[in-house]
Amino acid sequence: LVSRISVATGLNRREVTRLTRAERAPRAVRQPPATEVFARWITDPALRNADGRPVDLPRLPDGAEPNFETLARSVTRDVHPRSVLEELCRLGIARHDEATDRVHLLRADYVPGSDRSDMLHFLGDNVGDHLTAAVANVTAETPVHFEQAVFADELSEDALPAVKALVREHWLALVQAAVPALGALIDADHQAGRPQDRRVRIGMYSYAAPMTPENPPDETLPEAPSP
Image (cartoon, rainbow, N blue to C red; front, side, top):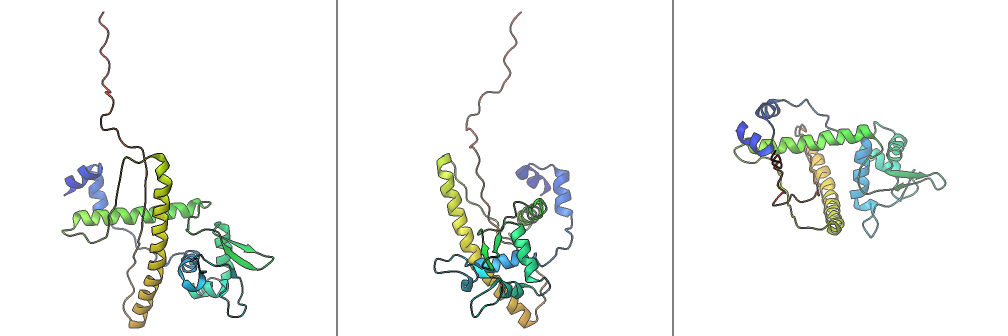
């Protein structure tokens, strides 16, 4: 089995053995509050307009209109809504208009590009779980995790923006369906008194690169000239 994994992945046998035998440290169950607030904002139908886009929110309650403070408190009461707002603004995900005291969502995906530590955190979590799922499926008698991909070649550089748009469209649809469904399952487990000791990560990725030539150029060294 170790040999099969080594051949399929290119990792040496010692590294495969280390990865398959290593035990992962216990993981925190909850994500940062800012992440959860963002996810709820883009998926809650009450917080989207007729076009399906997240609406701007007044920072404080003002009548029956949805507001940012109520949204933040629906996620956590351990962190003040103002702190959550400052974190979203720091990451460039939201903007607070002080003149109108309204909060504007600036993007539809949570990518804290200005924060290297957060990016490294997501890198370790996403790639680690993906690799662990793939290895578990190879070592198990039957696959235990969903891990599939589609691929194509003979595309042009001009076609890649359409591919990216397709992936983003389906990712947003998956997020909008998954976040409320997962929230409902969490609530149901809590009400039923079931042990809530499991976590789940659902991911999607895309990658584009030049095709490998079918007939690579001859890389043999030229013969030395005759004396």
